[in-house]
Every structure is written in C-alpha cells, then in structure tokens.
Image (cartoon, rainbow, N blue to C red; front, side, top):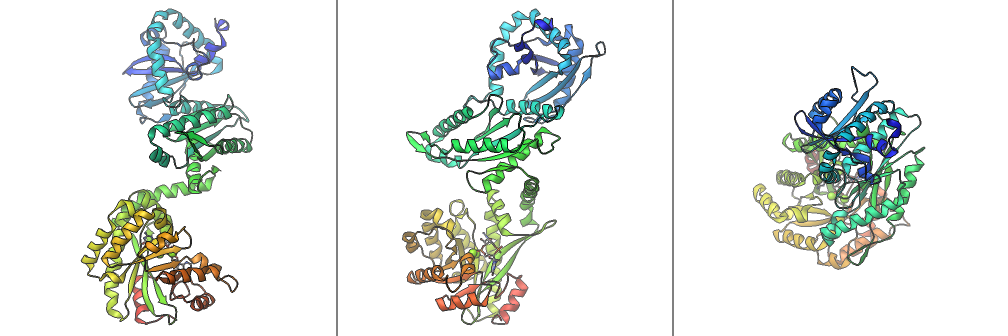
Length: 576
Ligand code: C2E
Ligand code: MG
Ligand code: MG
C-alpha cells in the first residue's frame, strides 16, 4: 500500500497537525508542509480522534499522552524534543512528538522516522479513505485555522510558529546527519519605529510587505524565510558548509537595502541590522541557536545601523551580564548601591577648587564598581533614570550645601542629566523642588547636558533650558565638540559654560591647537565660560592657559573622589 502513495502524501505525513480540543480529545486538522508551501494543495488530511481511538488505540493513547506530557509548556513556547513510544503489538513503530502551545490552542507535531513510514502510512491511508466525508466537512475550517496559525497575515510569509517547527526539523537533521549544518539569520529593520511615527502605521505595514517580498526573491527555495514579529524577519539558511555562506547571504541582503523603497510616493532609504548563529558552533538545543542569533542582532544594533554580526561566546557573556544588571538595577536605588563621587573643577590659573562634578557609580554586590556609561543606558531604557537623576540631584545639593560652610569660594556643584529628560519629565519643576528642599541657592547648581542631546532635540531643549535659566541655575553643555552644535541655536541657548570634550584635550600638541582655540574663542564670543575636561598632563594645562581657558578638571588635578576626600581637598584650599 505504501508504494502506491504519491510523494506528495509522503511529505504531507511528515508532520501531522493536531488540535487538542479538550482533555483527552484530539483532532487532526491537517498536514503542515503542503499548506505552508502551497505546493500540495490537494493533500489535506483530517482525521477524527474517535476514529483513531477505534482503529488504533495505540496511536490514540500516544497522542493523548503526548499532549498531556506537553501540557506543562508555557504558552507561546515551543518545546522541541523526542518522545518515543513503542507499540507493544508492533515493535517497529516509533513515534516522535514535539509540541507547541499558542495561547490556548495546543499543536502537537507527530513525526515517524523514515523506517516506520510503512506502518504509519498504511494506517493513515486507511484512515483517510474511511473519513472522506469528514475531510470535506472539515476542509475549509482546517484551511483557515492552519493559515492563521502558520502564516503572517500582513506579509503572507510563514510566521514564527511555522519557523519554529522548521527550526526543530533542521535541528534534528543536524543532530542525526553528519556534516549537515544550517544558520539562522535574524533581520531587524533599523529605526522602524520612527518610520511608523513619521509616515503612519499603514505606510509602515506597506514597507514591511515590500521588504518581505524583496528579500524573498533573494533566497533559495530551500531557505525558510519568516516574519518573526513587528519589524523582525528570520531566515533559516539550509545546508551551509562554512561561515562564509551566511555572511554571503547577509551581504546580499544588505545590498538589497541599498536600493530605496517607495513609500507614499517618496523614496526612502532604510537599513537593517542582522544577527547570525550557526550549528557550526556546537549546539544541544535549537532554542539556543535562536537565542544567540537574537543576542547577535541586539549587539549589531548597538554598533549603529546596517551591521551584521555572527554570534560568539563573548556576546553571550555580555548578554547575560546585561540581563543581570537589568534585574538588579531596580533594586539598586532602594538598596543604596548607588553612590556619588566628586571630581574637583579648578580655576586653571591658581588651581583653587571652584566646584565639583558629581559622578555616579553603582557598587554592585557581585560585579563591584559599574561605570555610569554601562548602567545609565540600561536605566534609561527601563524608565528608571528619572528616579536616579532625582536622587543624584538631591544628594549633590545636600553635599554642596554642607561644603559651602568650609569655603569662601562661590563653590558650585555640577550635575549631569540623562538623555531622556526633555520629553519625559518636567525638569524645571523637579529642580525647583530640590532647591527648595535643600535650601541651596540656584546659582550654585550647574546642570550639565551633553551636546548631542541638546542638538538632537534642539527645539525642546531651547524651551527647557530657558525654563531652567528662569530658576536661576547655571547651564553647561557637556562633551562639547562631539555632537553637532548649530551656531544658530547655540546663540539662542541661555548657556553659561561650554565644557570641551576630553578627546580634543587629548589631541592637543603645539601643532594641533586650532580646534580647541576656536571653541574657546567661540564660547567667549557668545559670552560663555569654558571648562576643559580630562586634563592629564601639565603640558595640556599650559596650552589651555595660553589659549585663555579659565576652568578645568582632570586627573592632573584629581580623580573623582568620595565625599570625605572631596571635603579634605576643599579644606586644603587648592590642589598641588
Ligand atoms: P562626563 O559628564 O563627560 O564626565 C566626565 C568623565 O570623564 C567622567 O567619567 C570622569 O571620571 C572622566 N574623567 C575626568 N577626568 C579625566 C581624565 O583626566 N582622564 C580621563 N580619561 N577621564 C577623565 P565617568 O565618571 O565614568 O562618567 C562618564 C559619563 O557618564 C559622564 O561623562 C556622564 O555623561 C555620565 N554620568 C556620570 N555621572 C552621571 C550622573 O550622575 N547622571 C547622568 N545622567 N550621567 C552621568
Ligand atoms: Mg559631565
Ligand atoms: Mg564630558
């Protein structure tokens, strides 16, 4: 009987899709591959569970048990693996089951290994013949269920569910077949949110469809291309021999993005970041490949646009650390793990301390000292920065209020503010409250905002900075020279000080002073002060003095120190 079955049916039997209707009741809805590929539209297969129960109690029990077995799965999670059963009457029949659960619907995939096809095929074929009426009845319903289950409604591409099934298959092949390898490539569209924001969701959807179809043309028949979620696509590159194959594919995909997309009659250039993982690295579980491709694409994103990255182990360590930091950061404030260091700002001419910059540190219980450069972006992402900024502001103002008793200087404290401040919270109001609580006079508080933040949202910045100025606090543009300050706006900003970024200070030598000179001249022309940051040598100090810079900070004078040492430095009147 098996010999008479067509190749189509053979493919169809590779996976049966079953819907677990209620406890101990299963319905076989159809067979997957024909539906997915639409190559075999005439081989749907629907079987009634009660029919199976009568004709093959073994198979029925197997299905029910397997479904119960997988019942512990989390919704949405695919659990791959083998679950084999032997028919007590027929020792030859081995079945494997894997399952996934989508919301409340459970789908069970049954595979028979090649040698067992004979048994299974003859059984299924008989079943099929006996239930033709049932097939007709169920056909349409099954079709639409399968479509929504395995296809993405927007792009028409296979969806994540379908991809996971194919991934499990690919992984089985990799485990059992010598020298078979495959790669996963995740493609994430860069700045897709801003496309949605500027052109509207419908246009965003249109773009996703265009991307899907453009990339599809690039791939081989054997590659599986699916939409993973929102602006993320995934490809399973079948049968690769070495790492150059996925790299080549990624390169080709990048090339596709060099041509503009047409959106609302407008030409739009977009880019994508890609992450790759391959079985060329040893893997025990298919999920881990997916996880690593994800890690790689996240990493590619941090490098800027249009990068593709192959996963390596250091990335895993980094991702684990990131996750740990995210988990722990929520507690850090309550547990008082954040602390402030203070770096003196001195008058260049006589090295009197005229202020301090508050610099935050996280003393992590296991990792030790963590730089703000590492944890502030995480805190911003998690929406914790507002609370952290407020704590820093309060703590700094209390400190300076105490220290002012030990000096006759108009000692000020400089506090950095993070990137999200212009849109997320009413900065002026917060500062006003802290000034009132701590009783510090506003001119002793200097707010530092980096140049790139100010000029990336300059209209909002002009507004906010004027509100702050009205409170009487002083304003400093930090890391000046690294962003794209516009002269037009710089003139409009009520800024007191430009702080030259330390990369420019580092570059200074007798033949290379023009840049710093022109920043100083510009600041003075605009009636602003200049602070130079990152002075490490006395030569740098001398250049800056010669160029007319008044204030500085850097390791030459003092590293950032804790509050106690800061006070000692202050009481010593000057540094050196
Ligand atoms: P920034 O505001 O430009 O701070 C100056 C950075 O340069 C500090 O690094 C400081 O320790 C370092 N530095 C000072 N003098 C020298 C020197 O002579 N040589 C070298 N190589 N480095 C020097 P830090 O403390 O790691 O802070 C890095 C950045 O993190 C800061 O840059 C600031 O953007 C951000 N940050 C620090 N504390 C806070 C904070 O309390 N709130 C916010 N929002 N951001 C902060
Ligand atoms: Mg600063
Ligand atoms: Mg700086």
